[in-house]
Length: 134
Image (cartoon, rainbow, N blue to C red; front, top):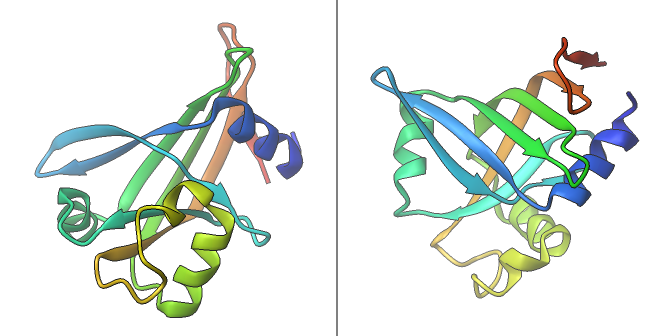
């Protein structure tokens, strides 16, 4: 499966579920990510979100999308929330839904969330093994 197919599944699904784990307790919530040209997964959150504290305690996450055909896409990765004004500006361009939530890239509440993938895999809706995306 190509990276373009990954983008198709993300577009079709609309949102994913992101899992974190803090002190042995898994936590899952819906999120909307965009994919950058260099195959990073970006979204936004607010500085007071519990996710920010979770990311600082354990930067490992997993994202899971299920598209309209029930194909599964799973991305394991490491979260980086250190993005500055340039990344935040680009995020607001790529992610129209986030644009209405923040004044601009200098809004102090805006946290740029980047997931750097360590493993990307998918499968069609059926029993069977996942296919790894290079």
